[in-house]
Length: 167
Image (cartoon, rainbow, N blue to C red; front, side, top):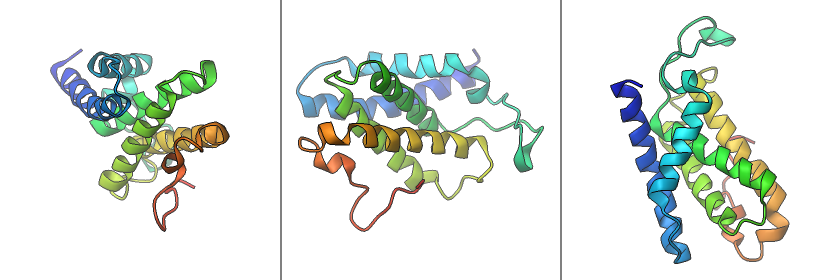
């Protein structure tokens, strides 16, 4: 791992930690947000390092055959949280932190769309990552809405007068 890889990972960990720490305080429980953020980012990076280290080659579209730029740390953080949500949703939906992780994923996806959504080329790797995180969030919310809607009603709302950007 080079200097830039480590730097990008640390930026993503910092972003993810901010969201997890907020949920940790909201719950009044300590689940070691720093360690969890570091582990989530590391696992996501290690599953597909070429996607995040700037060595990915586009397979289709206008960028076909060309190297893709490193995705922004915010997108790495969103993908790490999305992978965590998928794992919990599929393997342990009764996990008590699940709605809080959904809140964090929702915040990351909204922040990503707000900060970089219109700057991203529709056929770029960054757009694929952004779409992936948004779709995981939407699918997860659809699957658990009956269960969590009474306790977490604002989790399921895109905001006043808004639609989910990826629908």
